Amino acid sequence: MINWYKNLYVGDTAQKRQKKLIDRIEHGKLVPDVWLITLSSNIQNHLDILPADFLKQPYLREHLPMIVGLAVSYEESLCVLEQIVNEVYQETGDVKIRQWLLSHNDVSVR
Image (cartoon, rainbow, N blue to C red; front, side):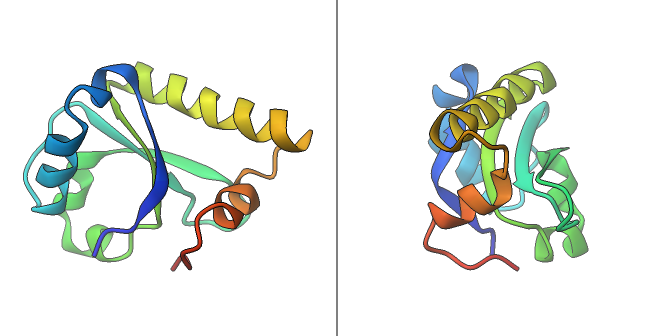
Protein backbone atom coordinates (compact mmCIF):
# COMPACT_ATOMS: atom_id res chain seq x y z
CA MET A 1 0.00 0.00 0.00
CA ILE A 2 1.30 3.42 -0.91
CA ASN A 3 1.37 5.93 1.93
CA TRP A 4 0.46 9.48 0.78
CA TYR A 5 0.95 12.61 2.86
CA LYS A 6 -2.48 13.97 3.74
CA ASN A 7 -1.57 17.49 2.53
CA LEU A 8 0.29 16.34 -0.57
CA TYR A 9 2.46 18.99 -2.21
CA VAL A 10 1.72 19.03 -5.93
CA GLY A 11 3.48 20.93 -8.69
CA ASP A 12 1.51 23.25 -10.98
CA THR A 13 1.59 20.90 -13.97
CA ALA A 14 0.86 17.82 -11.88
CA GLN A 15 -2.06 19.56 -10.20
CA LYS A 16 -4.03 19.54 -13.44
CA ARG A 17 -3.81 15.72 -13.55
CA GLN A 18 -3.34 14.92 -9.86
CA LYS A 19 -6.16 12.38 -9.45
CA LYS A 20 -5.30 10.57 -12.67
CA LEU A 21 -1.60 10.42 -11.79
CA ILE A 22 -2.27 9.13 -8.28
CA ASP A 23 -4.66 6.52 -9.66
CA ARG A 24 -2.09 5.32 -12.19
CA ILE A 25 0.62 5.17 -9.52
CA GLU A 26 -1.68 3.30 -7.13
CA HIS A 27 -2.46 0.73 -9.85
CA GLY A 28 1.20 0.19 -10.77
CA LYS A 29 0.97 1.74 -14.24
CA LEU A 30 3.80 3.59 -15.93
CA VAL A 31 3.77 7.35 -15.53
CA PRO A 32 6.65 8.76 -17.58
CA ASP A 33 8.33 11.91 -16.31
CA VAL A 34 6.39 11.92 -13.04
CA TRP A 35 8.50 12.43 -9.95
CA LEU A 36 7.76 11.68 -6.32
CA ILE A 37 9.15 13.44 -3.29
CA THR A 38 9.27 11.04 -0.37
CA LEU A 39 10.56 11.01 3.14
CA SER A 40 14.08 9.72 2.89
CA SER A 41 14.61 6.02 3.48
CA ASN A 42 17.68 7.09 5.47
CA ILE A 43 16.47 8.69 8.72
CA GLN A 44 19.49 11.01 8.77
CA ASN A 45 18.24 12.74 5.61
CA HIS A 46 14.96 14.52 5.04
CA LEU A 47 13.61 13.88 1.54
CA ASP A 48 14.30 11.93 -1.65
CA ILE A 49 13.23 12.66 -5.21
CA LEU A 50 12.63 9.64 -7.41
CA PRO A 51 10.86 8.76 -10.65
CA ALA A 52 7.40 7.31 -10.12
CA ASP A 53 8.26 4.51 -12.54
CA PHE A 54 10.62 3.10 -9.88
CA LEU A 55 7.46 1.79 -8.24
CA LYS A 56 7.24 -0.87 -10.95
CA GLN A 57 9.84 -2.70 -8.84
CA PRO A 58 7.91 -4.70 -6.21
CA TYR A 59 10.50 -4.24 -3.46
CA LEU A 60 10.58 -0.46 -3.84
CA ARG A 61 6.82 -0.27 -4.03
CA GLU A 62 6.50 -2.28 -0.82
CA HIS A 63 9.14 -0.34 1.10
CA LEU A 64 8.48 3.16 -0.18
CA PRO A 65 8.43 5.81 2.54
CA MET A 66 5.54 8.27 2.65
CA ILE A 67 5.07 10.33 -0.52
CA VAL A 68 4.87 14.03 0.32
CA GLY A 69 5.11 15.57 -3.15
CA LEU A 70 4.11 14.90 -6.76
CA ALA A 71 5.51 16.62 -9.85
CA VAL A 72 5.61 16.34 -13.61
CA SER A 73 9.28 16.78 -14.60
CA TYR A 74 12.37 16.78 -12.46
CA GLU A 75 12.51 20.58 -12.58
CA GLU A 76 9.00 20.81 -11.15
CA SER A 77 9.98 18.39 -8.39
CA LEU A 78 12.76 20.79 -7.40
CA CYS A 79 10.20 23.61 -7.20
CA VAL A 80 7.94 21.47 -5.01
CA LEU A 81 10.91 20.58 -2.81
CA GLU A 82 11.74 24.28 -2.49
CA GLN A 83 8.12 24.99 -1.51
CA ILE A 84 8.28 22.36 1.24
CA VAL A 85 11.57 23.67 2.62
CA ASN A 86 10.34 27.28 2.54
CA GLU A 87 7.10 26.41 4.32
CA VAL A 88 8.89 24.48 7.06
CA TYR A 89 11.41 27.28 7.53
CA GLN A 90 8.70 29.98 7.59
CA GLU A 91 6.71 28.13 10.24
CA THR A 92 9.55 26.90 12.43
CA GLY A 93 12.67 28.94 11.71
CA ASP A 94 14.42 25.60 11.24
CA VAL A 95 14.76 22.96 8.54
CA LYS A 96 13.75 19.84 10.44
CA ILE A 97 11.62 18.82 7.50
CA ARG A 98 11.04 15.18 8.36
CA GLN A 99 9.86 15.96 11.88
CA TRP A 100 7.60 18.80 10.70
CA LEU A 101 5.96 16.69 7.99
CA LEU A 102 5.36 13.80 10.39
CA SER A 103 3.87 16.11 13.01
CA HIS A 104 1.40 17.41 10.40
CA ASN A 105 0.25 14.07 9.05
CA ASP A 106 -1.27 11.91 11.82
CA VAL A 107 0.05 8.78 10.10
CA SER A 108 2.95 6.62 11.16
CA VAL A 109 5.74 6.02 8.65
CA ARG A 110 7.56 2.79 7.92
